[in-house]
Length: 54
Image (cartoon, rainbow, N blue to C red; front, side):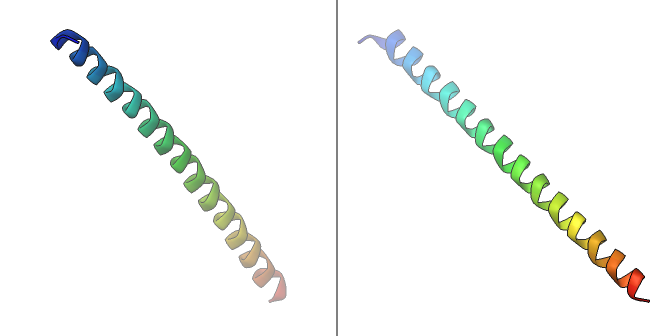
């Protein structure tokens, strides 16, 4: 293996890791917004119940 091989392998690995990281970040973001959406729904459901109880 010469220097170019090593360099190419390194950049391949780096871009692969970058891809995996952004994929993971995307999934995390999706989960977070899903959670906050559910929480918002629950909150408005609760306030709706509280309003109708008055």
